Length: 158
Ligand SMILES: CC(C)(COP(=O)(O)OP(=O)(O)OC[C@H]1O[C@@H](n2cnc3c(N)ncnc32)[C@H](O)[C@@H]1OP(=O)(O)O)[C@@H](O)C(=O)NCCC(=O)NCCS
Image (cartoon, rainbow, N blue to C red; front, side, top):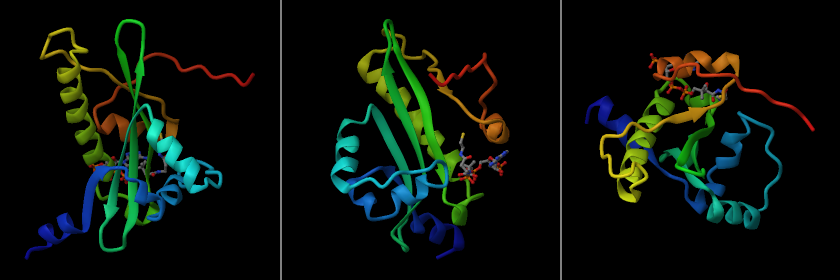
């Protein structure tokens, strides 16, 4: 077995499962944002009502969540909006291309979803817009992955 095959077997790309609560999913997220203590029941409620999909990379040997990214689907007046959220890789696993690969999976899933739901109004080749908000420090990551700056994000505490 060559090294490449071993790497492929160590890491699994998939959607979030409830068992990931025990596999450090929230711990992985904590490297992005301050995560409150979330009892399992609350986690389950969020999991069951999530307005989109959460993707993870699991280190299958360590049974640890190494990386995660979310696709939030918002029903707008005329068409759905697709937002990328919660992008983070555990520091021990950075630089392995996990986010690059997860974004590729999301791109394909969104295209399949639009085809299925006819969100593209019958146009099978319609391009779908993925949107995200990021801080200046990670702008370079998204530019590498083909995103471009588009507009002005405004925030205000009220
Ligand atoms: C940013 C972060 C998610 C990248 O995760 P990762 O799994 O290491 O990313 P990948 O390995 O898939 O990187 C893909 C490419 O982007 C590049 N890249 C990664 N982070 C970058 C950054 N901050 N700025 C510029 N380029 C970056 C990588 O070098 C790689 O390029 P290559 O394929 O040409 O080698 C990770 O560093 C992280 O969790 N940071 C803290 C949380 C955070 O800032 N999240 C983003 C919020 S908007």
